[in-house]
Picture (cartoon, helix red, strand yellow):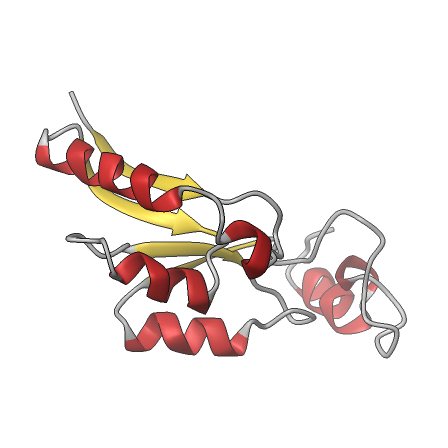
Length: 129
């Protein structure tokens, strides 16, 4: 028995690197590598890691993360982190593609993604709600 994929998840969709850096994710990562060595999981990845944290992880990692699961949507494109992941062969797994369920959005947009006219038009054209 094995899992196809396991990940280390940092709390909060927008981690503060100064706080999160103190977390002992390096020891956790080494334990995850042990799961791969033992044949208990095939691939390992991370969630909510910043560029700084991924660079920090490189110091101890013998297996690089295959995925970084991060928040990505039209109001939060995360371009710098996605570019870093791409150049380091780390796949991005996006969560919250239509934004958070919370009523937060850039003031310039004036609405959540679910209330956005373009999103509504696409949904309507596809017969979705």
